[in-house]
Length: 325
Ligand code: NAP
Ligand code: G4F
Image (cartoon, rainbow, N blue to C red; front, side, top):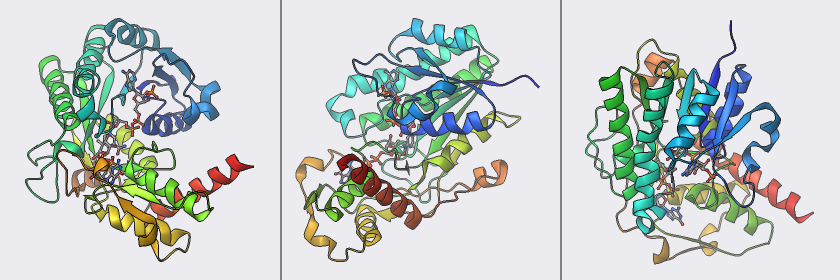
């Protein structure tokens, strides 16, 4: 059988790097879209750089996206690129809309014009549920986004469905709940905590400053979630799926568990809160119902909350030790 070809936008990000590894393990030829930066930011993919082909492009630039689709001639396209940090979406709402909303249309246009038979995955988000209308949230739960990011993702979600219905593209949307890993950006709360705890444990810091400790998220492991993306594109029919663990925890519980991983019990003395990290509108409570993915894709998470926290803290302790050698 001919080797399958996949194009990943956002390959330098957390999910892009795990997905590239996963597709290489399935013998795909992997192409990745990267935007120009003054210094290279290939930290997450440097171990596989010689096995993939990087193509220049930006979600703001239609021609570069069209060229990338043309050059890679992909069987599957994973559109993971986005301005993905919710907090930044209030300080840069227009840019977030350009990347995270209209960027999806630009990608879909490239597919429609150049490779309409390619299967397309859109990285939708549980942030679309925002102020939740029911719990747990499933594919049929109404959206009520609470940030410019969430609003942009709702647009991306519906334009994907619209291109499926208008042009008969195999275009699917994965509504993924929060997924984390040692490769998570340092600005997201889980990695901020694991890195902060590791520093405290090693005597390199004495506090972590956070925002809302009461927010609850359904946190899974990113490595498990990229497999679900791939499974969605192997189905006979294009459909949307929720991907989640079905369990949620507060930020406070994450903190407690992270300190526990390094045997620190009196964690309260190290944790402060600041208004600086409180959002203009909060998503208080997310918990996903992934029954459809479990039944149709035979997908299930393999890493528990405790294991995820321990994995992240350990990785940060190891990283900090290595960097201080
Ligand atoms: P991430 O680590 O922030 O990665 C985002 C990627 O998008 C990076 O490779 C980034 O490139 C790229 N990018 C940003 N703007 C771009 C532009 N204008 N042109 C081209 N590339 C651009 O995000 P992630 O956690 O891997 O998430 C992947 C996708 O899933 C995102 O769409 C996110 O919104 C969505 N999502 C994530 C979660 C989650 O919990 N992780 C849950 C639901 C949905 P640079 O390296 O150059 O910045
Ligand atoms: O880690 P977060 O920044 O992730 P958030 O906002 O849930 O978004 C992530 O998950 C979405 C899926 O639901 C993705 F679509 C999105 O791209 C991203 O990957 O914040 C989680 C919670 C929030 O309630 C926030 O208010 O943690 C709370 N929090 C408390 N203190 C903090 C902090 N968040 C950050 N980033 N930093 C803090 O100091």
